[in-house]
Image (cartoon, rainbow, N blue to C red; front, side, top):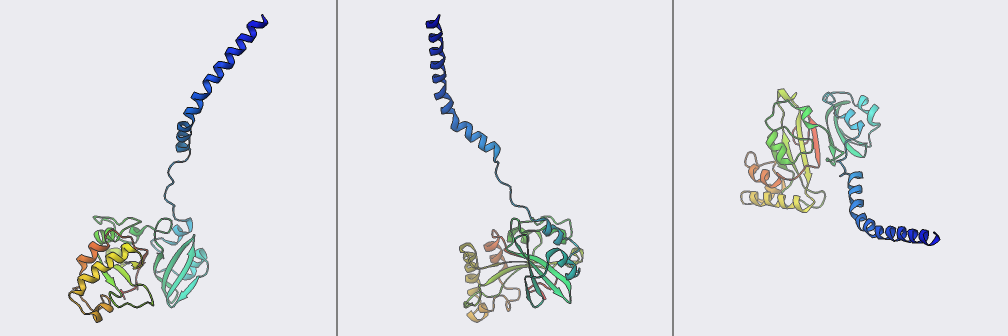
Length: 245
C-alpha cells in the first residue's frame, strides 16, 4: 500500500510539473490582454470646471469683478488686457471700465479650450469645433488672415499670424481672433510661403509692416492654404480684439 501511495504522489507531481510550462508560456498574452482591458487609451483631458463657469455665452459684457469671484485676482495687467491663471490655463480678458469686451485663452488646446460655437449664431454649414485648425475657422466662419510683420521683423518679438472674423448681428456682434506665433518649423514654413508670395508684389518696407497697408491684395488664398492645417495657440472672442478696433 505504501508503495502504491508513493507511486500516486509521483504521478501527481509529474502532472503538475508538466502543466507549468504551458501556464508560463501563455502568461505574456494574458498579461497583455489584462493590461489592455484595465488601461484603455486615455481620453483627451477635459477643461476644468472653473473654465466652464468662466466661458459662458453671457460673459461678454459682464463685470470683471464678478468674473474674479471665480478666477481670483488677475495674474497680470497690461492696459485693458487682464491675464488670469485658471486650472493650469492662461485666460485672457479684454475690458473697458470694468466691463468684459472679450475673453480667450493663450496656449489654446486640450484642457485649455472652450466651446467656441456658443458665442455665435447657429446654422453655420460647417460648425467650428472646440479644437479647430485655421482651416476649420476659415471654412466655418470665413475671416481674414493678417500678419504683424512679414520681413525684417527684428528680434524684439516673434511675428504673429492671425485669422480675424467679424461677427454679424446674428452673432451678437461677437468677433473671433485666432493667432499663432511664428516659432516652430511648420509655422515658419507656412509663414515663408505666404511672405514669399507677397514679396513678388511688395517692397521690403511694406512687408515689414505686415498686412497693414495691403488692403484687399494680401494673398488670402495663399495664407489659407499655407496655414489651413495648423492650430491657433490663441483664441479670443468678443469685441475690441487685436487688429479689429
